[in-house]
Image 1 (cartoon, rainbow, N blue to C red):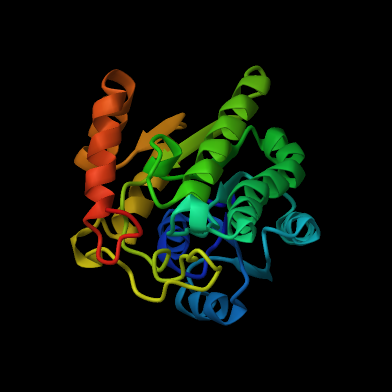
Image 2: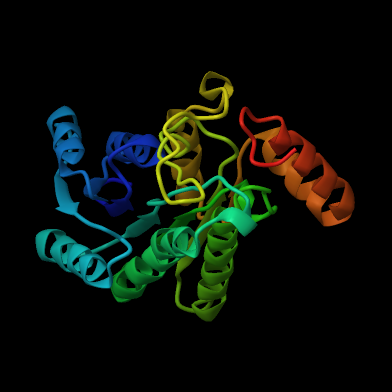
Length: 267
């Protein structure tokens, strides 16, 4: 990773922020993208061991993504790794959810990945580098109460898997990383049926994998040029395995598990 140029979207908090520190510890140069530039500035002040470019970016806006890539190339002359991490979540029954909520989830989670990958790809191909997508176990298994989130993550997985195949003979590495439940802000700012922020997480954050542990695993998988990473055993690997061999059982388990959340939208 020494002197590799790494772009990380959604770098202001959670897994994205942890990835910035992890890549920096390996000697990478960073391009940090997020809407909250004040938080990116704080990271710059703390990470004095590497070069950092912070770019205010709303990944749901195509022009912002194009400018992000252009500024990265202008500053560093190359792009080795793009980490599509920016994302938002939701919580609510589909029949009661405003369609604008679903659209916003797709705009940020799916189209943000598409836009950034589109503009970065020519530069990454020159380096035979990596495109990384941070999805979720919800990109493998439908989670009740999170239709828009699951749909967007399934879409990202399909997009990146296809991108890998298209560039099979061009040296492109594509990693699709699916963390299990990870401690971060994503649930606090998750959207409800009417588009307002949830505010309080319905889950015990302290019992989840830390963002730092998650980031360390993602960086290691990127270094090893793995194609897929599924984190945590029960909520991750075992759940995906159940979905493959016992899908009906998993449907019932997923329903019962998510129904136990405080103020669950279904019982």
